[in-house]
Length: 116
Length: 113
Image 1 (cartoon, rainbow over the protein chains, first blue to last red):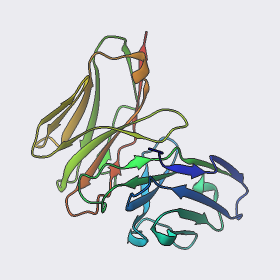
Image 2: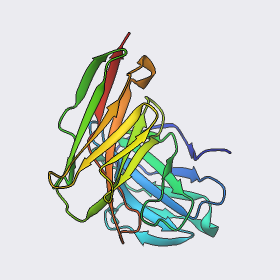
Image 3: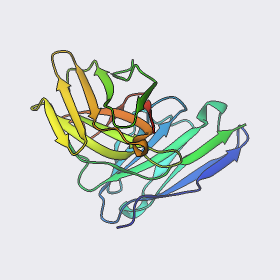
Image 4: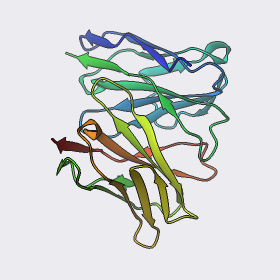
């Protein structure tokens, strides 16, 4: 079974530029998560989708971050414009059921973003 | 407000000995806890979990202990192996909270041969 795929693996941009990350979850997984992991910290949830609907985006900085999950499969996360403090690893995860209590999340390798 | 805390940034252990990683939480609504392991340049991998109705869960060399009154959990690895060297994250979830995980900062474990 293929795991969660993410691209690109690395991205370097200058502040105020735009960037987009792509995630392909494990086939058949209903729930998709985007996390931000800043160096020295644990992953922090940005947004959670169930199929193609948003379940939780309470910690997504909506003035600059946006995400979509078309057709309930692939997802993209966009930052526009980027700030220095957005430098982090962006992790995508998926889980097989409806994101319920006790559901195991499977993570992709992440995209390391550096904003100069 | 950090609801899940791993106060030891790093731990070094000799191969064959026991590794004990600790995690504290503040939110009494948390009732499901997980440990993830992360190697460099890879995403976190699920290791073991425990529900609040239990105080211990064991899987091979890995055992997680939960002390609800102290709001504390620990991961024991016995015996430790060099391949266990990684960053370990503690995470917590609350029933009715859509599966959202709150992670600790992580502890880097180094197992020396």
